[in-house]
Length: 266
Figure 1 (spheres, rainbow, N blue to C red):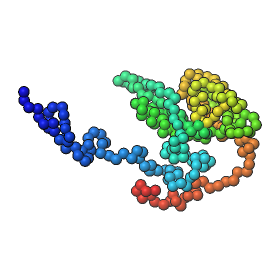
Figure 2: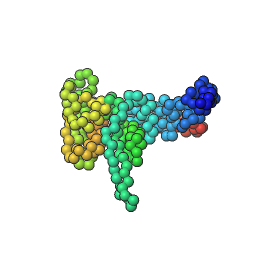
Figure 3: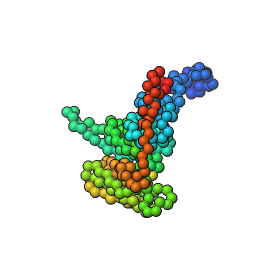
Figure 4: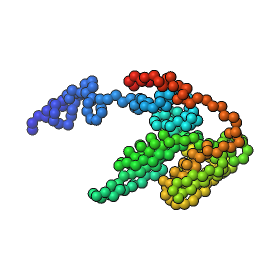
């Protein structure tokens, strides 16, 4: 029987200590993206005026953005203020088809709701060839569509706000969802889908009423979201105080925004 080759050389099962020259940095450059430094998330480089103001700390809260109805075009703005408090939930993934000459082309449509369980909720709908891409896109769209939800009381104003301030209605397609204030402790009296959206908005007690083809889940989610977004559309007596008008952040910080941006340093 021939002698087995030494452990450090090719052949046999033992590789010994070393032999393949894997000293310092020996593993580098193997596989995909091995040699790169992984710093987690990439540094956010704002591309809009609002993004620049947020990153520089000129805008202190999301409510300041909502007050002046400024368009949020970057999802990082919402992440900046809400951060880890913002949770997302995939409500539905459905295949949609388009007829072509070669047959059907199937894509996936994702409905995602994001919320911080404390007065902010957003809904995103995205269609893509792959499920993961659709979900990722829907989360980004949901963050950019985040709206404030006004909460109130059913009776006496005791303790924390717990329900919707007034009866509100949202509509999408044939589906109509009505939210009705409920007493403390009643919980959310709703189907599974609207209940999850209301919970993520931070509402603890609420009666609901729905009409139409509610089995069309996409329209039911949208109708519930539209109803929550309408809560700030009502001018109730506690909002009758005289409005003190202030400058818009775009006007207030116009000198800062007029400065030229050099490279990636804002």
